[in-house]
Image 1 (cartoon, rainbow, N blue to C red):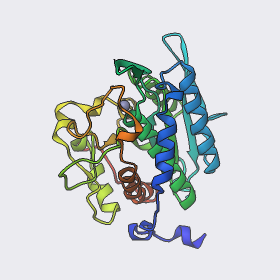
Image 2: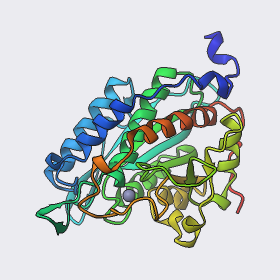
Image 3: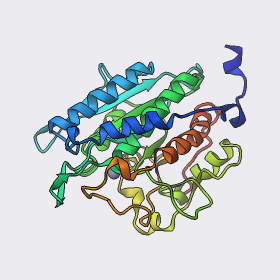
Image 4: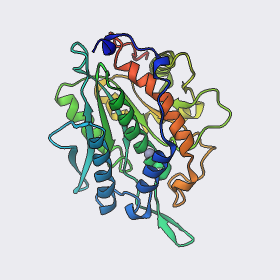
Length: 305
Ligand SMILES: [Zn+2]
């Protein structure tokens, strides 16, 4: 236990190894035709949910509620988020929470191309789902996260951020001490000609990127993408309901830059068009910053506007 109490530097975490083939395997399954585009309320998304639950369980992540499922209704259809929990190791910090999330639903079908109508949603957002699962594996294996971490996979994002809105409201009503929320969206292909690995939405609203890069040993992991601001991406994914409820840093990490992927909500958004090696590398680079967010004595990441 003495090891856990000692300050851990980002350098000590740089032996984090993410397996590209595991990433590819998860990605392939979650975006396979068998799951039929993971539309909320349909059988395909149930298979995705079971897959995610089994994975989290196998990493030693506990259900946050009675089970991993956080049920809600959308347009009189039954839907559920998957919510897991890794208890903090520090008595003084464990009642503070960091949420790492992604939506796991997609739109089901899209405009037909060559007889294909299944919108597989590989980049949007099997990629984010896989990232959250892998981060759960890495952080659970590592242990020593001072603050508690919630891993949340949201349903019904494509129906208007319904799953995240449901969970944010529920956690707010339960009085949870939420420090920050990090959402993963469309990280399946690398950005071109950028001096950072991924951009963060709402960049100027908090010091998240600055602190995160500092926690990553000075590496420029997170950066600013002008289009993210122009298109108000801050308000367009599952981070936003958490910001609205808690007014805390709640931001999305993405590598979709509007020029590097042609298949947004397209039936060709399939796993073979993604780059699992890039994903593995990005996830490796996110672990030290996320880990450090759970161990600083003070909540150093704050809103700036
Ligand atoms: Zn999405």
